[in-house]
Image 1: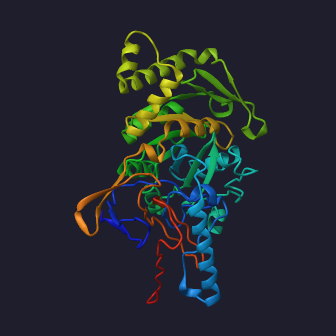
Image 2 (image 1 turned 30 degrees about the horizontal axis):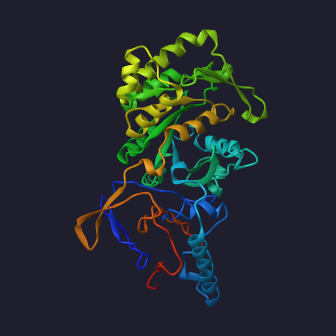
Image 3 (image 1 turned 90 degrees about the vertical axis):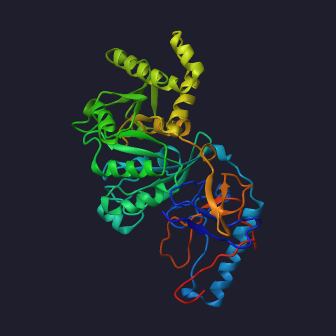
Length: 432
């Protein structure tokens, strides 16, 4: 893929860099209702802008002098705030994730539950009612499908989670490609009835292309014909992946009521009230004890291969402690050695909170991933690197642009955007 260049003259100590198009290396996004759905650029502004910030980048189309002055004033205020801002969430506590799957696997429904349980929304939006927060386009609300990638920000256990909800229809595959280009990690959803479907295979290959770490969530365990273990086998046969089962379902179809956490070796059971907000840890049901022990043994055997000390203890009959298990699962997930597999029913409000815990425990922060590499445009033979830190020169990628006369949304890769330190060029037809 051809190199992509983002040159921002006068941006502090910024050095232009041609980034290799096959790499993806985001840091964090602005916390907007659809923060990454537009134009990408940056790093240290997102922590204070909240959910209503907007950045006027365009457009000369309606360029009255009054509007120009207003845009300049807004830009000045924005830049001064960025200059004085201090990060409220450490970068190590960021998770930049996408949610991807075949159409109707439950991506938007899962995202809506995430927003509800994290306190981002006060009520649950439903796709079939046209009230989903992430389906903001009129066509999406009418058809009940996701057409364009939408993004939002929420918080869970003192971590900031930036989410992109991607389309599942084959006609909008490019939307997923754009999103994966700038994601740190992803949740791949599967319909427990249909298993691994064609578009799931497509987005999986796209994630492989960009080396995106991911976890799997087998959804719709309440549906007639739901089969968690068949879906697990299809992940092996259809995707060529190595699934690491860290949960098994308690029941299926109408009898589905919770999951067995193989890390804690506890059953998690939802009461069915309070929209799934309340659940309890209980002893594993007697009829699942043997199966839970079998899959836990497989999990332990897989993860101890990643650590010599853990392997020595395992050979001596000593199982790793819970915290060590989490560390090793995280290590293997980031390295792509395996993909953790969880299960639940987002529509029935079961399994979403443990999924959020898995995002925090097992998926990488921007600091866990390699630095972006590229060439110096003035000396192509020189290789430059950009790590995920505010101390680096400014660098960004416009991974998606939407038509809007007044609003643009930046995603900054590295460095800090400061007042009067950067020029933004707005080009339209023959005007500039």
